[in-house]
Length: 438
Image (cartoon, rainbow, N blue to C red; front, side):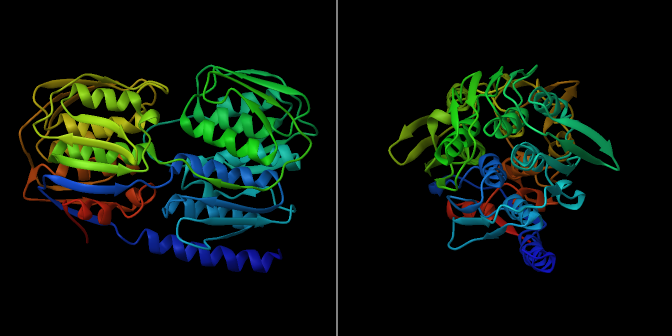
């Protein structure tokens, strides 16, 4: 693809991203009970890594169950600037094509939008032996260093230099090795996995992340011809192969989106079917909701849940999978804000993820924070107020909390929510929530 063609494609995709982010405020009024079926979209945290993995082989890839969200558009924009063609042949589908002659560079203006873009580092090193990737941006909830990514790739033979805000990476030949992660980082596991599939010899990743999205990525790579064993456990073995081939793949459902609608049900009450959701991907979350008084169970079509009374307060601690994900925490804080009793929420993974608490306090929530802990004393009702969404999940949590707030709540900076939720307002309206884009 000529440079001019890439620039044109960049402009087209950038225009699509602008359309996705034009809604910047969401108005919410007290709602309930909620009732109906919510279709759960493909997982944001999986599809972005699958898109990065297409750099490992030339040809045409076809992904199904791809959510129509800003982050997918931006990752498509990144792949386009590297020389791929990214298009949507039908709703929910994504076609990615390239001829194998990519420009292995991820520019700052794209990488700064989302941290997930750092995962292109592994596949670019594996296939092209070099990469120039800007240091990542993304959600504003504290530092999340990429040291583990780089150390893991160094074990495979990569070397790095840093200049002008970019990582300059090189590897004449990646070679299999034992990589021991000091923490089960999802991103580090993915980057090492994506590099190891084309490395010479066997790689063993110990203390690997166990999230369903890791297993989905491994399934995708195995379809391409990789040899990955143990994904979903704490030890992953990768036997390197010489080449991979393009494939067709269906993205797993988004467990955080499912969790968000379950939280909305907990706050507003009612009965929902989350079509396509997988209970086995969120066992711990479902168990905690059961402790709070919600009825929830797997269904042949997804997950069924009912909430008929005010939730009970519980204590919550975030932990690596299969523990409670840090992405769930704002949802728990929102539910506890109107639950009966006092709950203590502890953040064990990232600093700074209580920055939305001040917005809930503006709505009348009784929350005190100290370090990694938040003490939430539930109130029967909150009070509508203008608030601001600081990131994707906190923004969704503010909308959830507003379902039990007198008057009207205006959630500003709602473009953050569009990064991770497909048709969020429309889905809420379809189950009876009084919510609108404005």
